[in-house]
Length: 252
Image 1: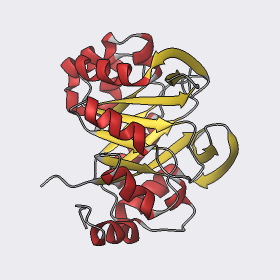
Image 2: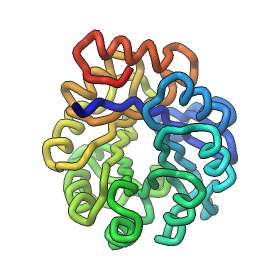
Image 3: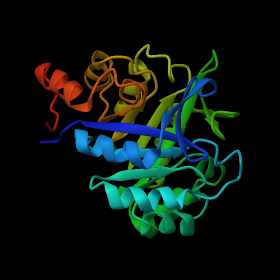
């Protein structure tokens, strides 16, 4: 049986977990990343994701101290993204305790890094993260923390990433990020149908029903959740109970 996964997402900026709306507006401080990671682990998270949201634009190195401390505190898979530009960066993050890396801007600029990573550490450790926005004509891929449009069409890039060796895709709708209006289930379904690797939904969760929709309508394999857990309005356990009662195969 393949269980659906609940993955708390910790967007880290200058060592603190923050949350924005549509990537840029209304930032608020949610807390210390290592403390929050340990809390979510104890509450039953299936995995964790850390994203250094300004590492690419600030040309900063990877937050290795946070990676190391987290590896000492949690015993579930966790993914790290932001500031990872080379195969050696990837290996270094994994050596410090992460289980997977999330690659975004670096692989748009140099897609061969996906193949290098898949060959060097295995596809299972390679998550290609895609930030996208509807530009009126098509869903366009953005990089550098959502600041730079690429002209690339979302489904085409998702398909290419899979062919190059990505083990999973992490899709974030910039239009829905932080709005709590629900995931982009239509596009999730399109991507999940177009590729054969797991798809992780991100951007827009406002209540447990939105997670159910991502799994059932969007056909996602996992969901990233931030605000819903960060503000304490719901717990991981309560969300899992809701999903289980509504027919979603989830690990309780």
